Length: 101
Image (cartoon, rainbow, N blue to C red; front, side, top):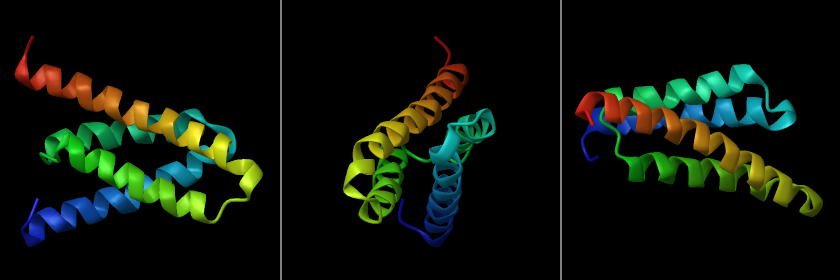
């Protein structure tokens, strides 16, 4: 993604991903899981590549891990991966629905 509109979409995705991840980390609640699912659907709708979704996940996760205590890093990384799988599951299902079998 290169143009201003694409950067805006990625900026919005990054901000929403950060908010969703920070909401998810303390309790792994269903509301955050639903928000992650919607992020995946929106990524498809706005034609965000899967690589860009993974890059956003990586950047936001690193932000969180940089500020974490050493004994929290593994649990946070596992939870962040769990949330990414929610995003990717929705991305995959939506993408399959758009492209067909």
